[in-house]
Image 1: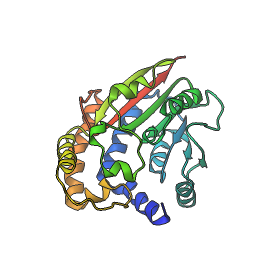
Image 2: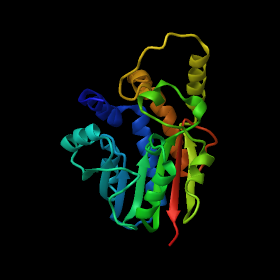
Image 3: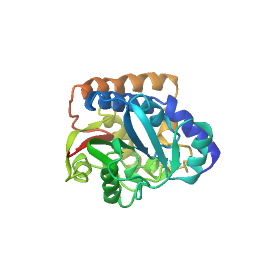
Length: 250
């Protein structure tokens, strides 16, 4: 990776329809789910260029962690957040330190995702929450996953199974439900047809293809309807991504 990659990703995280609506869904879900206690002590892991930490700061004091050295240096220099370099597999924090622990599209990058969840549970306070998002369904695997160094995609049952013990699932759902069908169609079609495969190196891959002002408005409007559904605790049966929130036993 290089600085140009992270500069592009910085813009994508703040302007692309998928990130804008995903972040809206997450924040509205957390505001509905969490206790009214403010400010919360929050740990945000795998922050990339820091947009999720900026948003979480509306809920409390946020400590941010980024593993990748170049990404850490880019974000540290550009975004005014409390950021350290570290690994989700060995979090440099005392046990039971945080009211909310977040990892948005992180554990799919980690070989030992069970240890990653164990570490998140360790630093979570009793009655605290963990919220994670991941990409869904291995059959949707394409160049986007390769470019972003994913190891796996998840079924929701496999994701929630990682959190067995020491607490309970508060809410879990797929999301990006409406666009699942065209995305699945085109990804499966691309595997079947002997098309020339160009090397994709842009930040996000899919995000640079599914862009432009018309698509931004169209896809954003479609995706945004799911925020209304998830705020009402609808469990969407399928989607391109999955979300789970877990509460630690007191």
